[in-house]
Image (tube, rainbow, N blue to C red; front, top):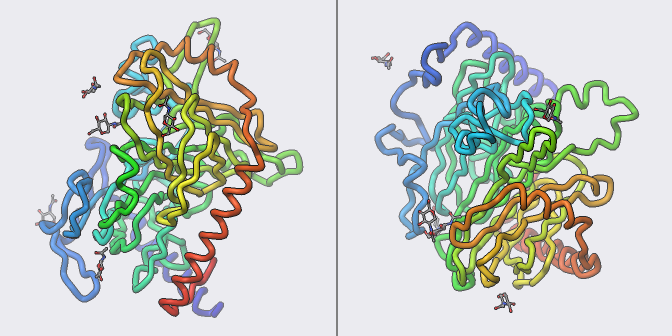
Length: 426
Ligand SMILES: *[C@@H]1O[C@H](CO)[C@@H](O)[C@H](O)[C@H]1NC(C)=O
Ligand SMILES: *[C@@H]1O[C@H](CO)[C@@H](O)[C@H](O)[C@H]1NC(C)=O
Ligand SMILES: *[C@@H]1O[C@H](CO)[C@@H](O)[C@H](O)[C@H]1NC(C)=O
Ligand SMILES: *[C@@H]1O[C@H](CO)[C@@H](O)[C@H](O)[C@H]1NC(C)=O
Ligand SMILES: *[C@@H]1O[C@H](CO)[C@@H](O)[C@H](O)[C@H]1NC(C)=O
Ligand SMILES: *[C@@H]1O[C@H](CO)[C@@H](O)[C@H](O)[C@H]1NC(C)=O
């Protein structure tokens, strides 16, 4: 076993070196995709580039006609609140410019995907084949992508993204094609499985809609996702170097909701925009909450004046719909909830997030507004300061959570029995 591992590691290192001099990008053009062949082999079949559907066309009503969905992810060393944000927030539209990742208003080294953080949201249908070209244009780090929640059965294990175990890490200047059929449906996400790159922002949502969705009658729209990212002002490698005693209870400094957190500077009167979710009055929304967080804390999420109904957990595990005011997510968990936009449309509402336990001082918010109502970020900021600590009924949450975990186990056990497959947990 160790011999095989050693050989594999050796092979990876050998490949690392072999490719070191072969950069596939140049300084002038921002992205220079590697020039590879125009087809690839996928189980014993040739897939030509012209058969691939660009990812934006894969977001569609799921009719059971599978597509080969293609996206290219450029992994790049980048920064929050960098030059693209120049003028933000005085010139508000600059905060939304391509390449401006305003985060919490401070520059900080990150790893971006296509100059976005979180990376592009991938939306496909069940039974589509996902073809993802990951181009590593970082200067010094290798990388891999893990598709969190997908079981990657039947030959897909080579695309699980665990470096040195299921694949060689992708060296700087190189491309790797992930290609696998997605037979499960539900809310998933993707992130780097190399080192602590995930804490530096290398993550995104992966939504797989079901061909047959029995819960569809519960909602009108399925186009809101909430990514909870716990965030520090310093890159991950400076945080855990040596892991000294005073760093054992690491707590993030803030929480980014879809990449944005409030930033308020009284002396300069600066209010950064936070994420705004737009809803139409009277409609019901399926909201996909994804705990893309990394620290040990859980986070409580409450949408002001809007109780929600939880319908699925951790991907496609359906539960008996359960109403609640507060959803508590731990690292990597997903909750799909229904929000009924039936409150007064004259005002905006806050989507509040607060750390639980050790992280109870970490807070953040986004805005829920009706019918494109304009948002005054100074007003929302002042209001948000009055809303904590969040009040919630822990017993009920615990109860529904326990129930959910039980159901999850039952579902998993059933699957295992039926398919007689083994699962190796790394
Ligand atoms: C890619 O490589 C092929 C074959 O080596 C070559 O004919 C083609 O011109 C190259 N394309 C680009 C854009 O460099
Ligand atoms: C997905 O494809 C498999 C064949 O690869 C088929 O057996 C299955 O029924 C399909 N799933 C759905 C929901 O259509
Ligand atoms: C607030 O703004 C002032 C004036 O622009 C600046 O000097 C100060 O550093 C800022 N404070 C923070 C915490 O960003
Ligand atoms: C969701 O989709 C509906 C209908 O296409 C649209 O009116 C609404 O603005 C969308 N909401 C968001 C948050 O994208
Ligand atoms: C709003 O919707 C929720 C969930 O469907 C429901 O429980 C509540 O009674 C509704 N409130 C109003 C004012 O219609
Ligand atoms: C909200 O704004 C978007 C984009 O500006 C527009 O497409 C949409 O129709 C607007 N919705 C309403 C209800 O005004």
